Every structure is written in C-alpha cells, then in structure tokens.
Image (cartoon, rainbow, N blue to C red; front, top):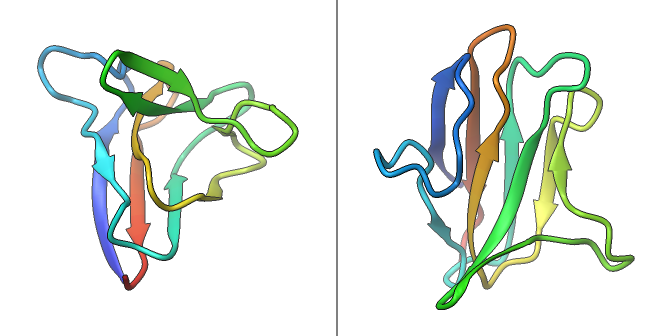
Length: 105
C-alpha cells in the first residue's frame, strides 16, 4: 500500500483550492481501496473531503448523504475508489497532516 501526503503537517488552515498547492488532489481510479487519515486533530477540528469534478468540487458523502469528515474521534475513513478527491482543514492547535493510503489496484 502506498501512502501519500495530501496536506503536510501544519497548524494553519488549508483550503482545497489553495493557490500555493498546499492541498494535493489524489486520483483513486487505479485502486481498490483508499483510506484517508489525519493526525493530531483535537476537539472540534475537522478535515473536509471533496470529490473533484471538471466543473468544481462537491463534498464527499456516505450512502446516507452525510459529509465525509475527519475528526478527533474519526481520524481515518475508507473512501470509495474511483473519484479524484481533495481535502481542506481548519486551523489546528497542533501540526496536523492528512495522508492517503492507496491500496493495490
């Protein structure tokens, strides 16, 4: 399983459309399994996960329509393979990074 860094550890907020490229999109079409996780989240801190479309982005949701988010109590999630995703994060008390494990395709 290959791991990539989507957002390098930082206390700063990182928007998914950050012009400096601080949040990296990740394509999952070649993989069977995708797990996204964050370290060092506390309290109400969150990482939002989006699906990238040619016309923009849309919040990634589970089957019940609830937005997929990483939190202190849910620091990792399995995502459906296929789409290209991108993440954003709020400012955090400690350095928080976001990582993706891409399973064998």
